[in-house]
Structures are given as structure tokens and as C-alpha cells.
Length: 327
Ligand SMILES: NC(=O)c1ccc[n+]([C@@H]2O[C@H](COP(=O)([O-])OP(=O)(O)OC[C@H]3O[C@@H](n4cnc5c(N)ncnc54)[C@H](OP(=O)(O)O)[C@@H]3O)[C@@H](O)[C@H]2O)c1
Image (cartoon, rainbow, N blue to C red; front, side, top):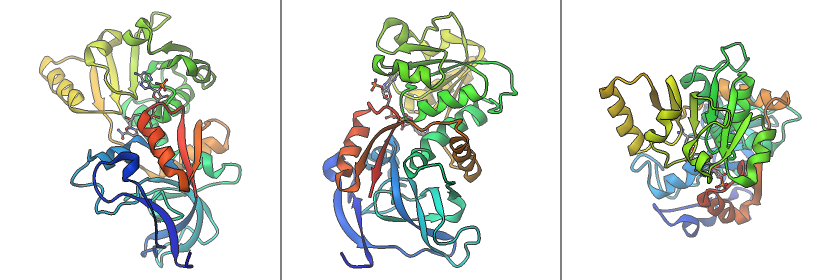
């Protein structure tokens, strides 16, 4: 391979799933004024990556074809743009890419979306953080109003799909906020979710799990909803009178329920989440990992040459924690 080329995985049209991914060699990009060029050591896959391939954000994303997917990367800076002041070549970092690019050997990130990765936080742990960690953080702090230093009131939180990328972070962060945490997951992951800190765990395939009933009879002040296909009618009886469902998977049904609830003047709320990655929040999460207070759960790691395996596993929807790719 020529010195100026890198390996990457890209797709050229909507749809196609794993078969739509192609392994290519493309020029290593050059950083603009406010960008850094990162030699990727690990990349994380999120369901939004293949949902974008499916056309969920059409016509806005991807911005153009062919598209190298993926937003979450950890690696080492090899070049900085002329206006970059806070990083230099050789710095270890973690970043959220605004326009994809993670399934490659190198990627460009904005300085404003890049944070340092301290010694003691591995590339795999760091790449497991951005979108899933930030979604959990935003849901619990901005939307649910929890204080992650534990100084807020004690509340009852339910996390659905607590074994997934977002859910594994939501359980741990809710415990930092001193919440009582009920969690749902499959039977095989109940011990793991308990170890992450959940006070009680429901198998989502049992009648109690389907009904989201707290084993200790609690009503929930907050539900962090991290899976799909649970209707408002299931949430409603489980909520306290001013309880909130913070929905990380808002679809048409969520938006209809939000509209209906406005008409009925119910005090129970349904809040759709659209993660807006913030540098200071990513930095906060990296520091929690460094301090041993947050543990990324890694489902599996796959070499870039087998990125299709990782993509297919995410599409299957049964990851325990994060799926990662290493160049
Ligand atoms: N709004 C936003 O900004 C935002 C940001 C990030 C993610 N999201 C969305 O949030 C969702 C979760 O993302 P993720 O990365 O956590 O997904 P994920 O890692 O793929 O989730 C997989 C996990 O969900 C579990 N699961 C599936 N159905 C379940 C159910 N009915 N009850 C309990 N557990 C269930 C699976 O358990 P089993 O294997 O046992 O079935 C598996 O462990 C996705 O739809 C994603 O697109 C949205």
C-alpha cells in the first residue's frame, strides 16, 4: 500500500447491510484548520451507524456517498490543523466524528470534538465511550435532572436494555447519582447488570419483565428507555405521578404519544432524546473511567478486515456492551 493511502470500509448507497460494505484503499485525509488527524487504534459501532445506512436520516446523512461509517474513535494524533492549539502530534485522544470516518486506519476530528485519553484508559475502553456514554449521560443529567455527584434526591430509575451499549452506562451513571436502579435485560446478562450496580433486575422475556414491574413494588421516577417496541400504556402504570420516560429510541410512536399527552395534560412525561455530543461531557466520562468509577463493557472486538462481522452483530441487536473494531 502506498504511503499516502489507508484502508477503509465504506458503502456507496442506502441499504445493503453487511453486503453493502466494501473494503477500499483511499487517500489519508489532511486536517483543515480546526481539525486533527488521528491514527485510529479502536473504533466503536453504534446502532445509528447502520440505521444511517438504512436511510433513517435521509437525505441529511450521510452527507455524501461513498461514506465511511462510524463516529467513535480512539487513537493517536499524527497531524494537527494550523488553528489547533490544544493538541499536538503524539497525543492520545478519543473523539466523536461529525461526518463518519471511524471504520478506517486514520480519521479527521474537530478539535472541539476531541478530548485527551489519559494513561490507564485503553484505546478499546475509550472507543467504547462516545455516543453510547454521551446518550446515557445526557438522558440522566439533562433530561432526567439527576446529579451524578450523588447530591440530588434519591429517585427510582428503570433502565431498559441495561445490557446494551447505552444501558450499561445508564445503570452505572444512575448509581453514581445514588438512584435505586431497576434494570431489564435478557436472562444471560442478569448477573452482569447486577455487577454494574443494578439493585434489581428483570428478565425482559418474563411476564414481569414485559410489564416492567419492579420486584420490590416501586414506581419509577425516571425510565431510561434503551430499546424499542414498549408502548406508553406499559410505561404509564409503572411511573410515579410526575414520572418521566426518557426515550433514547424515539420513533413515530414516541412523537404521537408526546402529542397525545400534551392534549391530555398528564403530568407524566415522555421525552425524546437526540444526543448532542458535548466535549466537556465526553471528557467527564473519560475521567470517570480513569478513576475506576465507570467501566465500559466490551462485547467483542473485530479487526478492520472483518468489520462486516461487527456490523452484522450490531444489526442483530444482541450485543452485551460495545462492539469494537481495530485497524
Ligand atoms: N437518541 C440517541 O441519540 C441515541 C444514542 C445512542 C443510541 N440510541 C439508540 O438506543 C438504542 C440502544 O442502543 P445500544 O447501543 O444500547 O444498543 P445495543 O447495544 O445494540 O442493545 C443490545 C442489547 O439490548 C438488549 N435488548 C434488546 N431488546 C430488549 C428488550 N426488549 N428488553 C431488554 N433488553 C433488550 C439485548 O439483550 P439480548 O441480547 O438479551 O436480547 C442486547 O444486550 C438503539 O436503538 C440506538 O439506536 C439513540
